[in-house]
Amino acid sequence: MKCPHCHSSNLRVVDSRETETSIRRRRECLDCKQRFTTYESIELSPLVVLKKDGRRELFDRNKLVRGITIACGKRPVSQEKIQQTVDEIETELRNMGKSEVKSRTVGDLVMEKLKSLDYVAYIRFASVYKAHQFRDISDIEKELKELKKK
Image (cartoon, rainbow, N blue to C red; front, side):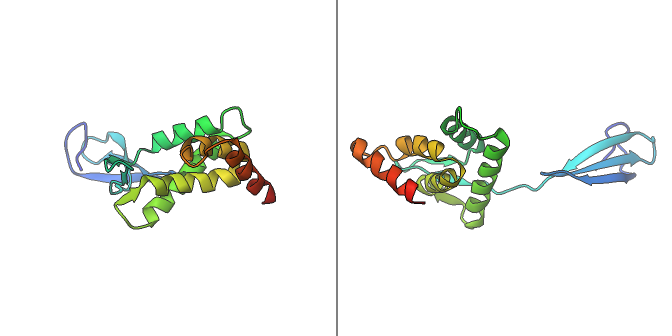
């Protein structure tokens, strides 16, 4: 690493602090005495989602946040809780130790998390995610009865 001011590599770390996703380091150039900040973060290997039609798509955390946010619309679920849920889903996917996961696996994890987060959000998500499984209103009612048992 070199000083962004004088390009010297004669540096020292003045302060180091951990953030949620990285380590912040305050550095000082021993030649020009200028200080600057750097951030260190873990580079995660890409996670690929295998779609039903065979296409492969990079895992998009923002897409997951959007979908869950829509399902939780006008519900008492904070954005912080949604972010935490997405963190849990991404961690579980990465802990599977595979570079590719099926979109069904992602959807099933979302369903599982939403079921414990908010029943209405779960039903909203299920009505889109499981649309092919719901033939009529009685199938949705059956799903609701299962939820009430728990």
